[in-house]
Image (cartoon, rainbow, N blue to C red):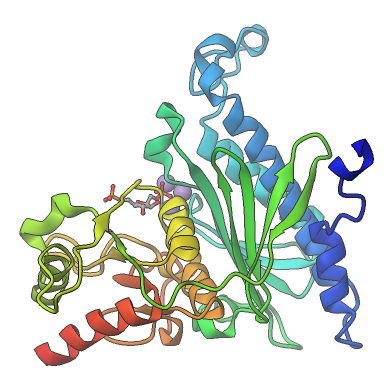
Length: 340
Ligand code: AHG
Ligand code: MN
Ligand code: MN
Ligand code: MN
């Protein structure tokens, strides 16, 4: 039947979050409004990313745009453009109070007339080295609430990741996928471009307990520390009779973590001799992804402790990170423990 080809009862992300919020009688709909503004940002970036391949034609990345050139204006780089879109969407939601973006040196304190309870930390466009070749990139975000009463302060965002009330990412890949957790599991939504709506396609994501894939920039092997080197050696030359793992590394954290979440395995950005704190940023890369991993039944470890227990002292602080399937992260934890 032709009619059967269409699902008629669509679980959009807004409907899903409204359902979830209705379980909390105290909720005033603020989170739903905030999320709809984040979703708008994701849709905008998705559409801009899809046009990035046409940059030469329409003059996107840094080149002078045909129309804009009349006003002597240059087109903005995609990451700068994405940042502007998210900042404006978040501020105009009227539900935010502090914003921390990878693209901005300083935190943004929202003016009092537009102020709300939520603090949003985000990486507007992650995986920027992959933009020009059309490989998957993404947006990462984490959400805290401000302490009640008093002026908002940087301390409201310098909190351990376990205090986040929600975290998620949107991947601009072969399809546009938004994965989010508000603390009751992980759910994935795919953008239906004809509707302009994110539809629930991956309900209650659970990461496999053990995986067959490891994901790391192995070009840094020369400067790794002992436990990381030992772990990767074991992935390639297992000594317990198991099969070697496959290596997959895209170089976009969102895409590498998304695959890890769905297929299982481990993603590593370890410390090395050049970068003793690794590369990835605690607030808007390490925390949101660690939050999602734990919510999906996996683990996230820094080499010293549970990642979500870290107390950041600086908004752009970095940390080594090992995250993914429960059993795989257990192994790297054992190697670090043996070193002490
Ligand atoms: P960004 O593009 O936001 O600066 O972050 C890129 C990050 C992350 O997406 C990825 O996991 C990592 O850089 C890759 O780093 P290497 O090129 O050192 O492997
Ligand atoms: Mn990034
Ligand atoms: Mn970025
Ligand atoms: Mn960047």
